[in-house]
Length: 97
Figure 1: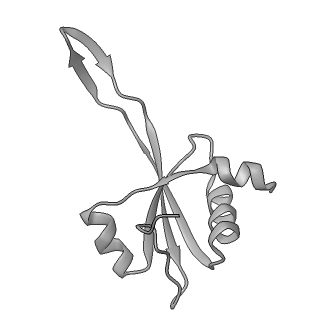
Figure 2: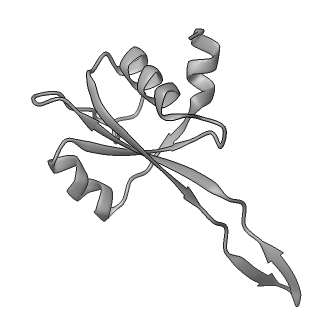
């Protein structure tokens, strides 16, 4: 996989109370491209962070229907990847680059 396509797979890390609890069990959550596969996500994480990925689970999140100034609208759909790392390896997703 080319470096340019690796950077286009990962959008952003998800940081919340739930993801903080998951990080205790070596699992991290990322927002990924809609077209990204599990293999793409695994390759991107391993290459960019130099860690060993054990498993990747992917979830499609449907956008909510909302009203804005008496007009119906819809938020965009998203895709999340849950990444489990090998024992003893961690990621610091809260640090600034």
